[in-house]
Every structure is written in C-alpha cells, then in structure tokens.
Image 1 (cartoon, one colour):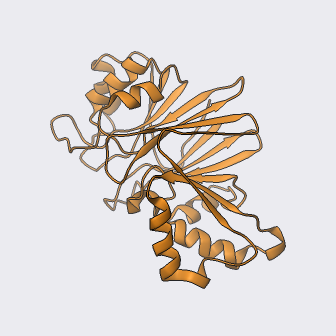
Image 2: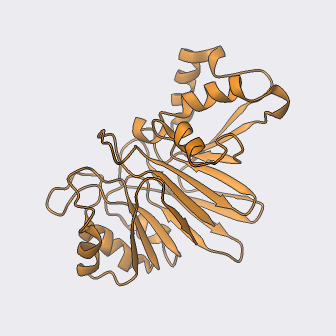
Image 3: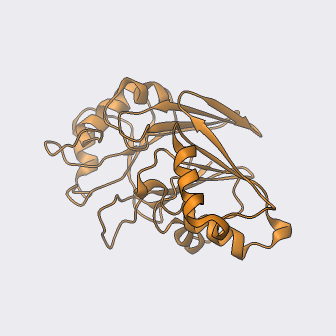
Length: 252
C-alpha cells in the first residue's frame, strides 16, 4: 500500500501546500482521495495516471476537497480515447448526487459522454469491497455530511483517513488498530475552529485509536510544521509521527 500526498494544504492559498489530494496504490488498484483544486495536474506531475483509477473517494463536498472533479471529467472526455474509457466510480457523502446533478446541469456535454457513466455511491456508515480491498466509511464532525474512510487490504495494512473533522468518537473507532491515520491538523493549539483538529486533539485521537502511525496533513499557514510533531508527541502520543508535505510518498 503506497500513499502519495499531493495536497496537504487547505483553501488558504500558499506556495508550499496545495489543497487536498491523495493517491492510494494498493496492488493493482489505484484510488484518488479528495480531488481538490489542481489535483489532476498534480497527479500527472507525480508520474501517476489520473485516469487509470478504480474509484474516486470524496470526504465531503467543500471545494478544497472536490473542485477538480470537473477538470477531471473534462479531461477524461477529451483526452482519453473512446475505446479506453470505462465507467467512473465515485464514493462520496450523502447529498453528493445532488451536487453532481448541479455540475452536470452547468457543464453538461463538456464533462459527460454517452460511452461511459459516472456511478455515485453515497456513503455514511457503509462498506465496499473489491479485489481484496475493504473500505468502510463513518460520519465525521464537520459540515457537508463529511465522512472518513478506512482502507483495509486483505492480509495487509490498514489506512484510515479523517477528511476534515473535529474530535469525535467516530474518528477513534474508524482508525482503531490501523497501521496509519492520515489526519487533519488544521490549527495550532488554542486557535481552533469548530470541525477541525489541533495538535493535542490529534494526539488524543491517536492514543484512543491505538493507531501505529500518524500522518499529519491539511495545515493552515498558522501551524508551525517544524514543531507540530513535537507538540503531538508531548501531548502523549508515542507512535510514529509523519509531517505530510506535497509530493511525499508513504509505504505501509
């Protein structure tokens, strides 16, 4: 299982961190998680194929986590030969079908074609399985019906992803015993915003879940990423802490 972090930032524009985007390779399976603005170009820049994916997973429909879906579909229609196209599978929270209907109403023929379909599975507390991979979703403490995901390979590693969330029981349960938790760490301690995490809260989530490794992401500029790992450790988390940055790959 190989996780490539292509966007570890937020809606706040910075030179160092793009909005959310992650690419997960599990054996022959390729998955895109949260295609935020610029995701398609960043996937290609990393030498990965944005169109050879089994599915796209969206944690919630805030633009910094899904806005590149339109460029993805526009490129898919116009840059992939008709004989190579297949249906596109999207997993997203409840209500995303309505969001997608608005997108197709706005862009119509520019993003859709008759020789493939876009199949949307709305997730809340649901399960999905294909080719030895089990995926489970759980509701998170955030807007837009946000969910987190747990990716579990038969006989292999387990990765949990928080998406955007504040501290909640569901996150600890979703990540329970996982090899790694890709977790948002949006603001410094004492500067929180409802529906987001601070370093000490990330530490508590790691302790409660018993996860072996924390991969921190979704940083606003106010987070001191040179010190945030030490802050998480000083709050009691004893596992490995990885400070995510754009372009990083982690093998589990």
